[in-house]
Image (cartoon, rainbow, N blue to C red; front, side, top):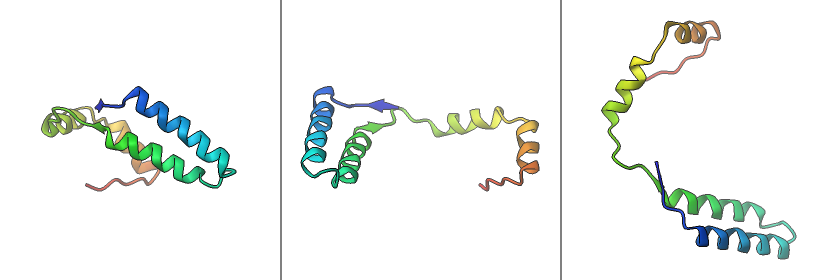
Length: 79
C-alpha cells in the first residue's frame, strides 16, 4: 500500500477542520470527517499488485481449525 499524503496538506486540513468546527459550533463535524477521509482515500493506493500471488498465499495459509470454527459458529463467507 502506498500513501502519498503530504504532511503540510494534511496539517492544513486538520487545522481548517478545527476552525470550521469551532465556528459552526460542531454542526459541520460530519462534513470535516468526510473531507479528511476523502483526502486520505484519494492519496492511498496499491503498487505492483499481483493478485494471483496474493490469493495463492491466502489459500495456502488455510487451516482446518478455521473452517471448523466457522462451521461451529455458523459463519459463512461465500466466494
